[in-house]
Length: 214
Ligand code: G3P
Image (cartoon, rainbow, N blue to C red; front, side, top):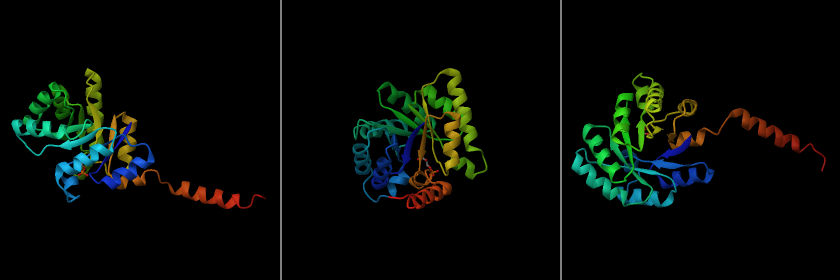
């Protein structure tokens, strides 16, 4: 399973890259708004700093506006894919962009039938938001399981990005289900390597090493 980081903060991206297991980045307007610099400037900087895919979201909600914006955003870097909201106009845009060879990440997906439509439109990636479903007492990971089953039934190549991740269990279940990608907030990325028994065991080993005659 590929690990993406869900942030627009270049410092977080660089720190995650140093671990050596980062495969890509996803952003959205909310994440970029936290940086306090112009939208496209931030996205361009991220695209240049990252080898793997970087998602950049359109702001337009109508077909023509999305297409125009997507073409401009795609020019910010060869690794940019365009985040398109899962609405009717968005599906139309995905169809056109796919025909032009521009990769898309269809975002704000909350059920498996929406994901089926995105795959039929030719989406490169689909992003089900599991945490936001959990927040309203729905099982977010059930939707991921359903999407994977449907894509497998018909051989769709659209890659499933488990998004809106809140905790390590989302990552565990994503991997057990065979999701292609988990896009992880920096705070969760930092926490998943940690286990108290690892820290305790390491401290003990270092202490015991001191007892070995030199
Ligand atoms: O980037 C899309 C998604 O991961 C957003 O997550 O935490 O705002 O629900 P969140």
